[in-house]
Image (cartoon, rainbow, N blue to C red; front, top):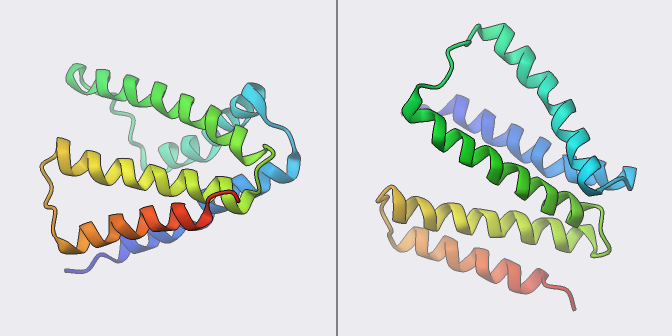
Length: 139
């Protein structure tokens, strides 16, 4: 099975989501207004993509409540993340630990809520994620 598009998206996420906190840290502008500014500016590429592909179908009623909750969760997470990205902890500690913690929550949540498989490979991956947090922790 060819997953070329998915791997391209993974690379884009790695570069842009991995890089934007470093660029934000350069600004030394954080807080809730910094998060608000990031959200407003992030609407531009999303709007352009929406115009490009013409996907103007709004969520159905059953799809709306999860999207609303996810949006609130994303906003709270962004507030906390930007605080870390522009805060006192080293960027090479705070940002990767928060990113890896997110991966752990997503993996465990997908296994629990969507009944995805849990095999030796995933358990080893989770163990390595926890190990990475432990190794990167502030001294």
